[in-house]
Image (tube, rainbow, N blue to C red):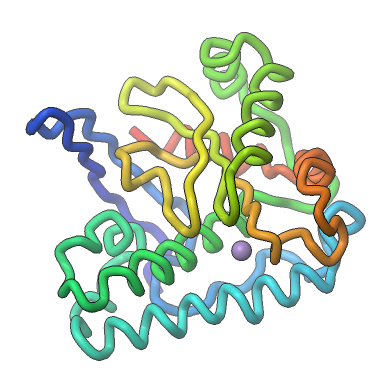
Length: 234
Ligand code: MN3
């Protein structure tokens, strides 16, 4: 079982390829199957409810994996051997007929594989390392200001999408939003922390109150994982 892969992410700007950043998904299974949750469905209660976790993982994430495999099976079966982050970053090289399916479902598989590891039960969330704290202070001024900007991106994402803390090739932090199942790697950025703001991620418990979900979600942020991603992206 391959549990770790590295990749080079290039961002094209002005005709030149700039800002190469190596991104390692330490500890994330990157094959084409549904990864198990690293904790029980109820482990994130009361912030994220058990029923939401079960449907989200067993139905939504499983659906992305199945549809991604179906798309690649037909037109590009050799791509099923590639790590998911490589598929997501390079989907435009695929036959046009399956690009949208791979973008959406490959992105869904990638984002959710990350997402589960970016949350942890009480007592296992850790805290930002000194290096991550410094990068947050350099990027935003303070932890409170980071949370404010992250929340603004996540709450303000129109329709379905994600809010992210990302790092650029100069290791500078910022917050971005992505629509649908797009991921910051498509823009040469390393995702360090991401929140799913599709309604399926919160509607059962929070209904239309996305901001309340985001506030509660900060209680389950796995800072150990953020620290790990920060170190592994070199
Ligand atoms: Mn989701």
